[in-house]
Length: 357
Ligand SMILES: *Cc1c(COP(=O)(O)O)cnc(C)c1O
Image 1 (cartoon, rainbow, N blue to C red):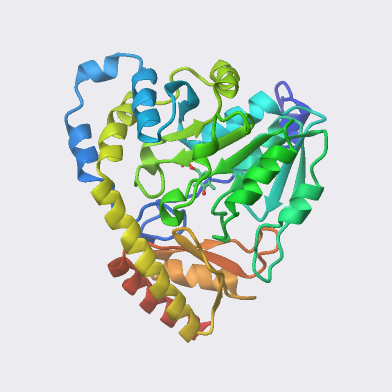
Image 2 (cartoon, protein in one colour):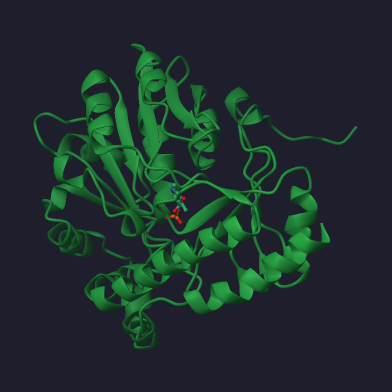
């Protein structure tokens, strides 16, 4: 028999796995909700000016955290930069979850909450949203809060549905579950515009944590850059757990120019919102059901032939994401929205693939 080596912890053996995409993802990438166009040209100019000296030093988060805090009107001790929001979720789970504790999770939602929570041995308590509108199942989430609830993860707007949680609902949940971290994951904030970040660090919300990423609207998914905003007491524990140099020097150098170029960000967000409206219209014309989205993607109901559809789109150079395996999403495919011009191309592909199904 093959020597298997030492066994990992039981929770790791039972862990939910994440499968990253295989292959080059060549084509129009409407599958991962990235910015489909480019980051700000100020960022690429900054990268071009990086010197050897910038690379030989260990990267210091502190000064850039202070700058981001100012941008968000927070105190420096309320901001933690992370290697993408994925690392932020990982660190939150490592800090607050263990066996016997519960992660409360409205589903369907972003998959990494369950991946990282399951590795700690915590129990994931899913709360299913109704397919009719995929609205946030507020009453049932509140009813599912127990003394063991230690983290409540709310993607706002949610993925893959695009639906948002009302601000008052997030805040009420935070007040009803003072024993738990309430994470408002605002990865798609710029396409939505509402936030609870102004409540972070206030006396009433010591358990509220907000996440933001530079992977989506800002177009920096490859740099791996995200942040958490929370009360200093929470940051104290997270800073113990996080790897001290997980945000690399290139990401830190690029963050200030990315933040400063608000005109670029506004342009991109405007493109996506206009293209989103046009995509709804095309879907309606083609009798494809959609759900109203507050993010840079739309969930389409394709039906039994979701695999053939996803493959057909791919063969014609448009990558989309089959979400049929997500809870309550049978037959659904998620399409990222890019610029208007990019989307016109994808409309033609959509028409011909649907015609051939
Ligand atoms: C994309 C996404 C993330 C991951 O962001 P990174 O900063 O790239 O790790 C986190 N949360 C949600 C809801 C997302 O859709």
